[in-house]
Amino acid sequence: MESPAKTKAPAPRANVSGLRASVAAWGLVLYAGVRVLEILLQAQSMAAAIGQVVLVEWGSAQLGIRWSTPQTQVTALRIVRRAAFGAVMGLGATALVFATLLATRSVRVERVDHVEASVLVIGFATAALYAWRDELLLHGVPLRALEDTSVSALGRTLACGVASAGAALGRSDATGQSVFVAFLLGNVFGALWVRDRGAWQAWAAHTMLRWSSTTLLSGGVVYSRLADNAWAGTGGLFGGTAAVTALAPVGMMALAWAVRRISPRSAGVG
Image (cartoon, rainbow, N blue to C red; front, top):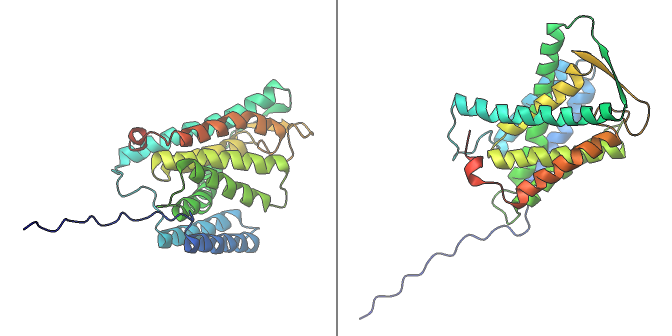
């Protein structure tokens, strides 16, 4: 007598809708809370940054967003290596935009009489806090919402870019250039999340990009006086057509990384 054939349990089907609605909804709630704190504490930038980070970190923990996936071996040395790679990427992006402005004579650089260590430290701390907030909220939440779905690595990377652009569009000083730059940078940070299988590379890249542009080149080490035109922009280094031109290849490279699904070998390193 033949034994009955063993049947395999059907493989779990991907969520073809490509979105966990509950995660997305909580992300919107967190975003609203961040904006409320920003308005209430607008006169106290450091307090506002800390309050927003505490809220977003708590909310992210409830959603299961992690700085490193459970499959990633975490040691202090590996975290430093991951963050160092991201820091180089962030500094490189700022340097690329600044070099473009210099080459087109759209920025005038003036020396600072005295470099104040306190200015550099406070500027770095503020940049790190806002990068922490934005990475978890604008990129961690979309990636969590798309986790275990049929959405490709390219789609997840683009989702991070769209979330960044949406946040930039909600700013009172938003321009077409600044929104598109936010989209490009969101793609870069999203690709780093996917590559790193966590937040460390993206957070470090975001921190160094903010710190170099808003502190080092804005009075911390030198003063950068932008030309009064659309090419240079009116919202800082990343507010003009020059930034779009400089960062477009970087954003495309990030998408190319995603198309190739990003090397699993490199993603587990660091």
